[in-house]
Image (cartoon, rainbow, N blue to C red; front, side):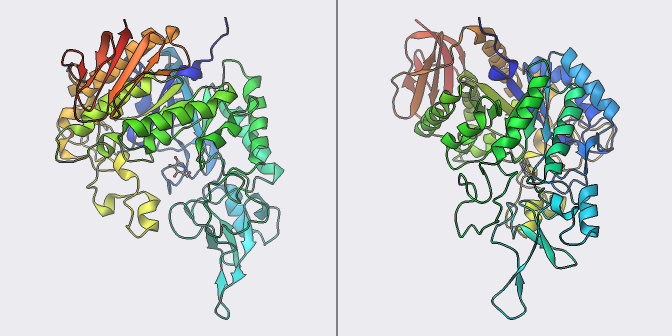
Length: 523
Ligand code: NOJ
């Protein structure tokens, strides 16, 4: 029998480190806090944790601006804490994936400081992407070197004192590395080894498609920057980087893996990253982007399965992350129907967990947390808010710290009465992990039950699905001994013959109510 690597069907839980659990009372989560809550993750029934960046960082973009890739930021702990977390996670039967941020560093990284102090054309500058500006239309006017926009608003270039400009696809505090410089490449290979030697089971690669830019840095001229082989993302040269990384991962025992954060024009382009000598997984975000519609879900599922089929690897599914509006809130339409977002989120979980491949959950979805939409402007920290002059709210609303226990802020997130780094809503008392743990009707119990059942069934589930007939507002598929039915409409639909295993709302006989899902064994 072929041995199946752990990640292929894993349920991975994303820990947004700053907002998970605060052990030392500074209002921000930390590694010791995560250690203290590993029991929650074991009881939830996930297989692995993915930690967002905890490296030394000024946190201009929540830690995706790294100043030292080989150390832990003091606000999150120490390397010693990290080692203890790896050991404890493994002792709890949990694997640990960490985020690696290779597209850009912080502007406080010693290499960037050195580059700023060095003259144009110097070796220190060639680790980043510095270029002269170009003349504008008005006399004496200087424009950025090309027309690329920053993903956070405004141009992707900032001018330094001597007149050169540096590229940053994200905030100005996140200068892009020049991956055509071999020094950058070998530095990151050593960084991977540093963390692999400390026992991590894998990496989530930030901006994985963006590392190598077109050499001429040609203009986009209005084209989508994500287009395959365009000047910005998904250049053919990036694949060679991952071939090198794969060789390193393969040198280690224990199925060490890498998953890329790759955004492409269409799912078929993802397959390029999944060639057998490249990455093990890439995120497939289309389920997260799809509206609440059986037809849309079905289309996305078909395309995702088709995209990965030739690669021999398995798909990945995700509904929420630290970059998107929480799905309870996305599904809360129309807002006049109270609880519709929660009902749909319960149903969506059965879809997510019934599909072949692995699922990535985002912290707090197991508590049914909604997006916090009423944060005061002065509390907002996401650079998107500032760079768009407040036009876009940014991603703070999904990053509010987790409520663990108690009736008032900080709900057990921090010890004592400390104020968390983002304010927590007054209405969260019924949503704490403690309040939900012993409530059989809670979202937490629902997640635990669904994950436990998936785990029990997993060995018998094949890697393909067969669609079964269903009305247009619903979808229904069979995966070996499991049938999954999801009704996105308002009216009940008839279920196929079978014995219910788990249902997100009570059935009416063999009718599945609207905004619900069920798992059945076929009869
Ligand atoms: C993707 C990360 O998930 C996001 O949080 C970050 O802002 C950008 N990459 C830039 O690093």
